[in-house]
Structures are given as structure tokens and as C-alpha cells.
Image (tube, rainbow, N blue to C red):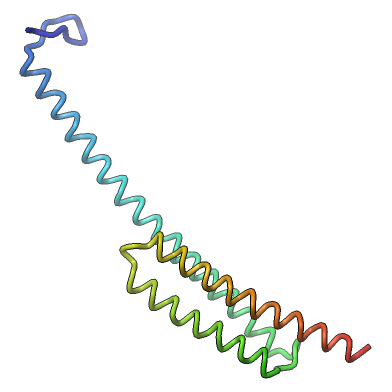
Length: 134
């Protein structure tokens, strides 16, 4: 049975099926391209997060070495822990780049925890220094 075309003309049933199949292939191609773009964006996001964490770690190291906080065993241990977590994170990211989203979330929470511990140790050391100089 013929179908009515967009301009009112008659279109054969086989032609409608072919047009639908062509449109499906076109949409599948677009979906594939979007999935590739999404994966690339996830990789860029994880890379940006890692670079952000590297900057935060560098800032903490500068604070430690400038004498703003006298080095203590506890603070040094926390910094070593953060460096170790950072090294593991970079390895994990490089090894799992194809599963960027889940690796990024795991890495982010690990770094966040290590950073929080180090920051708390810095604040504790700063408070101790402030109270000893009062």
C-alpha cells in the first residue's frame, strides 16, 4: 500500500522503509560520534581534576617549606601519604583511561581524603605554633 509523501505525492512502501533505514543509520552514526565526544570530555575532566590536585599539593608543599609551619613528623608523614596517593592516582589514571568516569571518581575521593588529612594536620600545627608564641 503506498504512503503519502511530505509534499502530498505518493511514495511506495519500499521507499518509505529505505528512508527509515537510512535515517536510523544516520542517527546511529550521530550517537556514535556523541559517545566518542562524551568519552573525550570525561578524559579531559579527569585530566583537569588531576592537574588541579597537583596544584593543590604543590601549594601545600610550598607552605611546608617556606617555614609557615615548622616541619613536624606528623606533617611530614601526611605529606608523604599525600605524595603516595598522588603517585597511585597518576598510575591509576594512566592505566584506566578508557574507563575515565569511574576511575576519576575513585581517584578524586582518594585525593580529597588525603588532602583533607594533610590540611587538618597543617591547621593543627599552625594552631600549636600560634598558641606557643602567645
